[in-house]
Length: 183
Image (cartoon, rainbow, N blue to C red):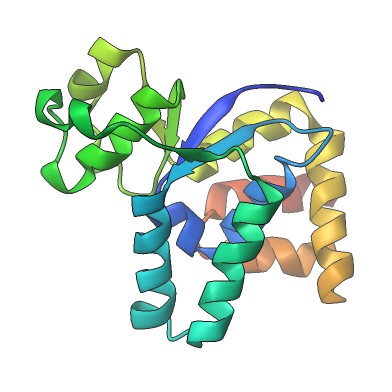
């Protein structure tokens, strides 16, 4: 174990396979983060995979099963009682409530507008774009982040630069920073 920093992953992050793959690999030992989500977030992720991204149902179900098996302690439960006391966007109150219940000081989301700072402050929680957080992790642990990207490249039988180019579609500053550092 390297770190026990608890983060809550929003469905939009889990549904983006490239970003999700990187974050979950950084959650394996020696981990930099400890991921959390709720059943509601996982259901939303599945709907996105199948309905919006066109994944076959079997693939979406396999992703759900494998993710839950790999991180059996990640699912947060018992947060529903907090929903009425939250001030962020109603569509994403379940995310903030689960982050509170799961003692996660950080929510990773592409949808920052649903998590204004004034709604999160009473709970000592922040929301961050995955790109910004990955840049912080890279600054802290360059070698480990680079090694994980190498693992992803090896598994896909492509170069690390190609992994970064693909990630650049959703994480342009992160990908460019690493591409620059790799030369």
